[in-house]
Image (tube, rainbow, N blue to C red; front, side, top):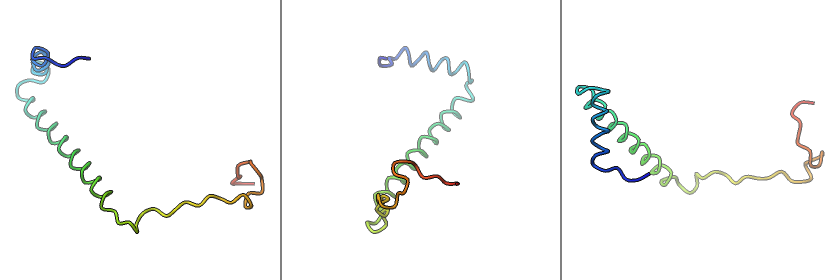
Length: 81
């Protein structure tokens, strides 16, 4: 898929104008811009929250079950017996 040239962009704009009309195109563009800004803002807020997490609040280390606790060998544990 190549780059879009001037003629391809003009064709897309004319088709959009014909489909949505002259009054709706500015509204659609504004709502798309707001959506993109909100997405970028939430993405940056999330990365900031992850980067500012204190060292002592990290998840506790996971412990694996010791082999001595498993009585069935390699079989999975049954929840109801």
